[in-house]
Length: 247
Length: 247
Image 1 (cartoon, each protein chain N blue to C red):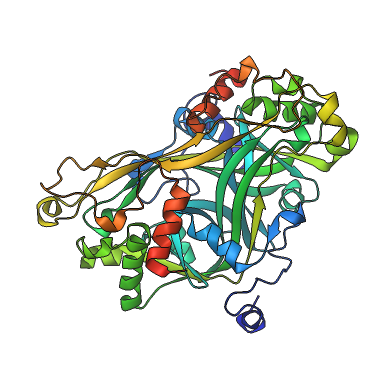
Image 2 (image 1 turned 135 degrees about the vertical axis):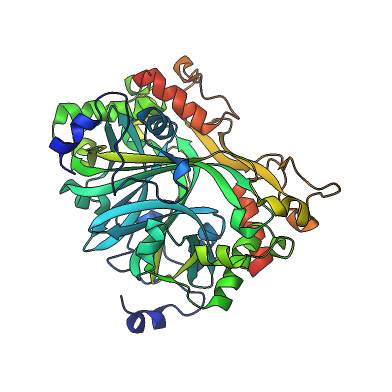
């Protein structure tokens, strides 16, 4: 999909057009194409999985990432296989998945998982501009830990060189959500005496464990007030994201 | 990597040989190639992300899966794009990631995430034998919910046809683990007055929510005793896996 044909279709807000690439074919009523839904799923996530191709073979690598406008960014070692491949400008699919529940039905067919997922498609490029790269490095930290880039040591020359910042414009994307209870065949509710239930699944943060070599007098910065032990990680990430980028 | 050259190198137990495909290049001391470690990471997971290629483009799809010996299995709608593509016998990379902690260091460079991940490579094939397919459908349910396949309605003809079971032999794989606290540059411990800590991250199950149309008198089966509200999902999955497949 080239830029000229695509950009006019999704300025700000709005939806990604359904194409052969992003159309949700299986259980199409779970498909979501509006940016509000897709960006909410992305911005609540810390980690994604990125698919890319080397010599015709697919690879799937987990990595931390974040969104700025219609762009997604991630980073890696300049020496890593993923980054060396993607630096050349290759098509990637960046996928985020939140697991929300296990759903036990009265037939195997209707067992399910509640989830929110996004598949975002684009062409990964290396961020070459050093000023932009430095700003992105700060944003990456601050997107997770509000205000932290100002508290820590800035990258030295060697670290800056060893880190490659990758980005892609979201050319198209789709979201997929299942958010309901057991849904069985009508006749099975009466006919099948199997206990059926939904188990919620949440990912949470615990109490912080201080570095053993902490300088005296340091405590959690006020800007990190969203980091409440027991909080859902997706909630924390959504809140810290809004602190940095609004919305 | 063809079978003849590969199988002799990893019979039972043992390790996957390091090749260009699976070698962990970035932070190589985090790399793991022994089956015990790799299988423990896989068997503690409910969901994986599978990368595959259509018309030269990578796709990354989340799905539930499980392992039997050196094979991995997953399923999908016979109509889905992923399944239709993979049924033809295509290379895939199946990746599992457990996020264990956020690690806040004194420089951006040393910020990290504790995790356990596996990338498993192979060629996906459709399971054609109907008896094996039916057995796998039961195993898929029982691997998550011990004994449940005997309690629920068996697949009818239409469901059986609409479900494609996919499998792959693990041709090669690598694990990657980070499991440590803050690790800063020596001079930064004193020089940088930034609160530094690790936040544990866990994924847990909650209390079950009964189906609103539950038949009277049904309660959680004893075989599901691992499903304790508040339990870690990776622990539950590892335990229910062992109940079905031993180890």
